[in-house]
Length: 501
Image (spheres, rainbow, N blue to C red):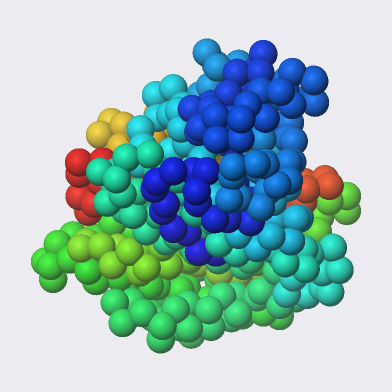
């Protein structure tokens, strides 16, 4: 999707559809007031008839307004003016884009960023508009004949800014949004693919294609033999129940100086998780293709980074495997030796994500990282604790916690910090190995993070449990692409690309 900026008299600008905001009690936004004046009060007159009161998300489509060059004018309810915040703004944007996408107009001009929502600056308002639009027009169609797809979908969106002095800032917002959207779309598509197509080797092939597309990206794929030579007993044990061989995917982005320590992103890449011998219930098991959303988000963040061309070093690591029941699969009570040399008693084969992650996290030591952030659809317990809104953040590094939380708040792709106290570690005690792979029902998301913490003692580390945010169920089933935007926000800030925003 293409985004541009426009300035000037709204009434004189030509567009198939002009999008304007209206607040409750028929209060027009400043851009809508301009159009009302140009049309001889036509908007005010129509609103007084009661067709639209300004309720959040409600819309009214008008044609051929006198004195206005736009073919259509779409009025969007923004709720109460005093409550016009980021959430209300995004709701209005989503409603407008969804309708325009079905109109067949192909392009539109949006003036919803005026007035600015509470506590939102011009850069983020314009970036949010582009990101919301990209999210609403995304459709998955790789394995279906999408008969419900719009025949002429929205392909171009112009964002209106009142002052020409804000054009440069707006162009930065659009450039960043386009990179974020490209990364988010990639993450969504990889996650939405079925497990029989998106296998560990398929993910590896996608990484190699990214490496061919971007000169700044170097890709290394570790196969089963190489992982065995290294001693990745935990990761390999998970793959034994599958006919699909595992892969450890390593993507090096070298935009900084050679001696700059890299940020490492590690994403769980379980391309399908049936639970192994500890078999999951059949209901909604199809959604376990989404158990690789952590890995998909690493792919998305790396693509966004390549599009932006930022000056820093980042490494993306994706351990990829399937977890299926088989005669060779892990059994409850089995003991495996991880790359770190620590032994693990597998009490539940469905707690497999931490097994592939722990070897990947140990592997990251060789990069001498500045910091490591892993992201995984790790526990249902995190969904119970936090619901579907924030990711769960676990770290003992105060500075890193602040950085991630701030990036989440700034980008609107939020996280919430959870405890990672040593008090929970004894729940992982085992009579037969250095640790068990589960710690019981109590604090399940926390003990999972405590398990990973045992493999990250040589660098700064944070864990994001994204089980609640990575996909939607029900009628709107599909991957969300989160937390690509959070990760890209953090990377932009580290690269100094958001100065003077």
